[in-house]
Length: 305
Image (cartoon, rainbow, N blue to C red; front, side, top):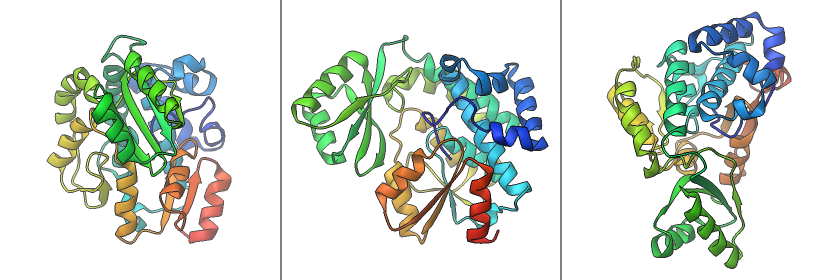
């Protein structure tokens, strides 16, 4: 299940227009959040959708709606999945789609999580940088020797690492990478996620996450923090708290699943960002993405669920 950055105006509109259960979920979300999240998703403005406190529940709502259509209208059964995972906020989508978290509770916690992360440092003071075509060891060495006020936020694939920090420090880091002919792109984000600059958000979210009603887990849900299985309710809560400041170990998560017998991956939610990352991690696995009804029919023919 995808995370922040995969959002776009109009996501899930095809499902909303055709399936009553999606209309119902979107209308419920408007009431639960006391916010016209449906209107923001379908009509924008884009700046409002890109506000972290709106983006996180919006991506979850889209992912969950597509999942429910795939499950209830087409018969996809999570019991057939060996592992379930999500990138950052996508971990909450994974937990909810599996049934470990309730729909209403997931929407509310992601609204709070998004707001706390957005407000963790003053606006325009933080930044994130995608580093392309370089190994993580090289970037770790550069940070350790010269830029220890920058932090690896996402280990996404062998050729994509995301770095967080204060904007002024990210600018200096980018300049040094350019001198070394290492390709990098500054990301359009509102804060430096997944690093210790999010400590204020951790302090706000810790009691909120501790109060979550997480149901017993019988399925293998992978943690961003460890890149391995989360075994029980208390461990899930602890790792969700740590996740706010921790590096997202996406490469390690995918490698763990492959090493433990997974050869087919299905991405459910807006965009195909994770599908691209998985193929970069291992070009031999089969990867599919569901964000249109046509995608579900293709998968139904492929897997016969």
